[in-house]
Image (tube, rainbow, N blue to C red; front, side):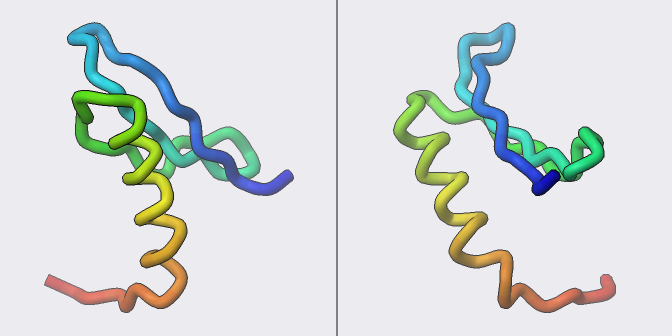
Length: 58
C-alpha cells in the first residue's frame, strides 16, 4: 500500500496533516494551520517540493 496524508483538527482547533507510510507508521507531521484550505496547501507543497529535496546533514 502506498503512503497517505491524513488531514485532521487537533485539540486546539488547528488543522494539521500527517504523512503515513504504507505500513501505517507516521513519518511526518505538519505545523498547525488556521484553516483547512491552508493545511491542504501544505500537503500540496510537500507533494511538489519533496521529490527533489536534497538530504543535508546538519
